[in-house]
Length: 281
Length: 281
Image (tube, rainbow over all chains, first blue to last red; front, side):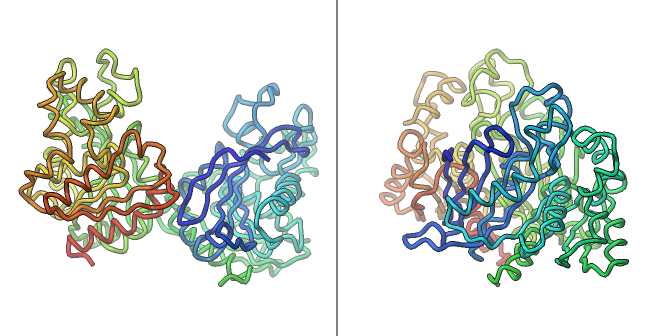
């Protein structure tokens, strides 16, 4: 694991690392924010919030734009941001569109060629990355997960598919029902093939009926989000949660859009939500 | 004045505008954050903090990365971010380097050709932009000014040269003595010519002895700033302030660098400094 850069931030440290991933068969970069308590003279292991970003993002968007570090520093919470896909593999079509391939791994395990050997972002996020981070950095095995848009979808499925792995989950403007929208269908067809029955295990809305752990869902959504009607469909998720008595707090925020200006406005509510579950607040 | 975009942010609004500037003889873009009190059903005029960004920046870097909106929303403070130069003029050499021409206007009025007709960012910032903003937006004529690096230099000279125009001034890692560093010398030679006596009126350190208004200076500087030794020289500014009894609060922050992670860590101190001067806190 190679340290690429360090920036002091709110008396903690923002670091970027590169490592060779066995899961995706290639190099991956990620960012971590370590609060002051984890980097002082007597470093203390702290719990981790994993943040999954949306289409086109790298590990940097959240760290630069969400304004999360101030409260994370105060709470004593680390934040880990993986990239949104493998990169630079020279697979055919890898860089042809913003919503498939590079920057668009969708946090699933691809089964179709040529993606199957590399596009395994689900395994990377739920297994390899936490193991690496917990071995190399001053963090505990207490984890929470959140994300935005494609990453909101990712956070929800990672939590729903892994009872006990996370203490809490939340999402901003998640692609809540990807089997029913264009972004999800394009990605699932490309990574998983035409058999739609194989898409279902990667759709949060379809996972709710059989979820073995009733982790409450905190979901924030802007009413002026340019993708709300065409891609996101939080109502489908809320409806199935209601039907199956899975607690969801879906907060609709009047006038807010899909940007980081929306995320920044409510990120502290999410950090406090996770901090409570992690015993920090 | 054309509205390019609006994002709701902390219940206020982040907006971007384009207008044709008489001062720079071309189109300019700027960003503004209006707090909730200025955009509600009964909008109230609020004071303005002008933020001047550093080399290579546009109006967007501060708005996306500094994390200033939360406190500005609470205080009832507008923030206006101009661009760092005219752009797209097709002047010879305009885009050849990161530290001269586009993105590097240095907040001075050029006298050398071909820059003299356009690179008049000083007049733009102290005259045309405030007049425009105060005519078109729900803001008062109570102004403060701050900035980073090249923009910290800009904030200091704008305040020092215009007694009464600003209620308060501050800077992050300013180019404090530009006539004595490579960035400043390159810019001043290019925009003002070889006669170094004509550079002096654009150097904060050289303006202190004759400053007619003793506005206290708040200056934050990271000790791990990669440009501290070669370009910034806050000690020269602090020394002349001490000699001429001009109040300066130069805060050296151990381990912080030149990035927005540094700015974000201390922006709220600066907002509170300006809010007190503007009667908001």
